[in-house]
Length: 299
Ligand code: ATP
Image (cartoon, rainbow, N blue to C red; front, side):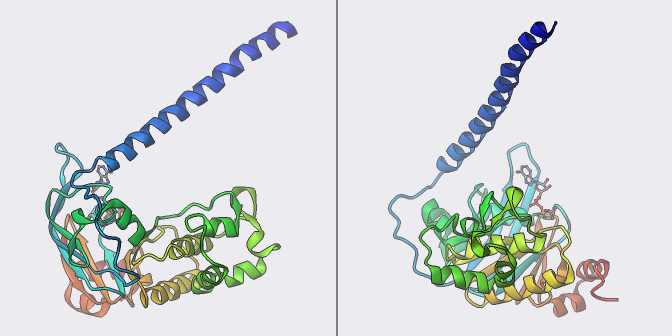
């Protein structure tokens, strides 16, 4: 019986591996298809001059119309707003209003079907994907920490960054306390095989990682999970500091992180409902007041 069970095990184990392999292959093929789709985007210009330097980028959406597919509902139905170079602009609004879609279009993961999106006055369709990738930094919601040291995590997308640049990014993102606390400082293993970082620390690691690539426009999809008061305050400070040098566009799930924004774009069902500072919107817009009230910012 034991021999038979062993035989069965040897028979079944490779099947399990085969199934796992097939799943990985399928995932790999899906990823390749997606890359191919991005590569095949229409209007990809060849040989456009490189970016214009470190200056922050201005962003403009002008009557942008977009749906994820011909048989899908319209997501952006004439979205218009303007972001001058530099400063902090927040996108807020109810779930499904189309905030993340703004980021997807800026990164050209998808092509808009109507209207114009321009960066520094130049139609986004005239930017090469290489130029665009170099100019944009993107910090996703709940950004992952990779297995490896903190330093490896920070330099992941900018292996050529100097020690000075690394130190500056750490200070700017208020990670110096963390580095001082870790047993081996920057060389401490973090992530699932090492020290686990808090949500706020993970977010700041992701911001530092993005800053090391010196983006001209930082897209920050704020994590939906709650941050404690200290981490929330730190995030506000970090965003404000980065916005002093770079254009920062943040999708804010908590208004409290962006009450100090230079402008808040309030989106609602695929359009822009209002634009203003926090105080202006509290004074003038009922939906904004409701959003603020549910988050205990006004009584
Ligand atoms: P949330 O605050 O919940 O993240 P949002 O304002 O960012 O919402 P979007 O994620 O831009 O909204 O979504 C707008 C609409 O587009 C939603 O109806 C959503 O279901 C749809 N949508 C988003 N991404 C895709 C996609 N990849 N394919 C198809 N539909 C999508």
